[in-house]
Amino acid sequence: MCLLRLPLEASHASAVAPTSAARSAALRPPTIFGGPPRLFADGIDGARFISSHDKRKLRHQLSSLGGGNHFIELSSNSEEEIWLLIHSGSRFLGGLLKNHYAGKSPLLKSMEAAEFLRDQRITVEFARLSRIEMAQRVISCISDVCAQSCHLIEQIDRPHNIVTIEQHGGSELAVHRKGACTALANARGIIPGSMGTGSYIVEGKGSPWSYNSSSHGAGRCMSRGEAFRRLSSRELFSDMAGIVWGSSERLKDEAPRAYKDIDVVMRAQRDLVRVVCKLQPLLVVKGEN
Image 1 (cartoon, rainbow, N blue to C red):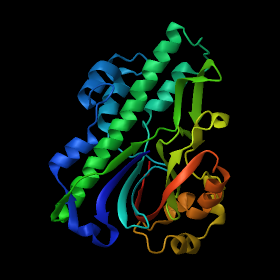
Image 2 (tube, helix red, strand yellow):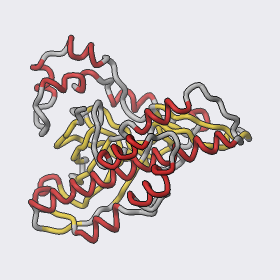
Image 3 (tube, rainbow, N blue to C red):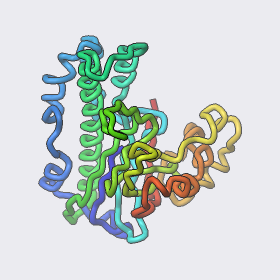
Image 4 (cartoon, one colour):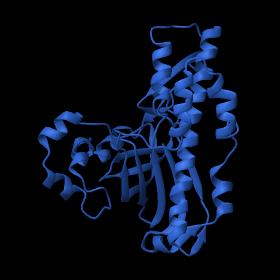
């Protein structure tokens, strides 16, 4: 998940554009592998868990959104600031990593554990660079139709399926956050709800009881199949009123009613994070396989 705050007012969003210099400065922080060319040269091309065919395929999938619950969204808060949210992953690269290491339980200090952590860094970096590239493209689209330059104020990027080596209770542990994000004390985070109900910007409280973690979203209350069976098109379109979206029945499985109430979820984790602001969706693009 990547989030970018733009100094735009919601009522004047169509009249603002970021400059090329601002895009480059704000969206290209130092990276593990130095950017897409070095990511492939120093990471993907030498990774043993990726076949030659898949390495070629990945070059075409960098900066693509994917499917399922992945999205690009423009939102605003109560102060009418504009935020760009991008929820995407590593495409099929994460699946390759999982299958390659499935059933293995390497010791924390072993060579195999070190290889896994390096391969995971490649996967996480591929996903992060994809989000940066997508953000640049979205901002370029805004530039094409607007006349006033702007700059990016803030950038937050939080993976939610990752293993990290951390110290807890005096011990070194491998912490696997699946459907969870880090919530270190005072660190910014993002917790989305659904495409019709909004998202929260938060700061972590560093709770030791959750291993410095929070949820990464509202979570589903219906499976995708159940959503297609139970929800009507009228309910979907009614819940999305006032939001620019794909207006397609194919998105029933991503309907707001298929997800838990984000406000209830936030109250349940008030010991883990504090709310900075709530964002309301203005425009949503959902990924489709």
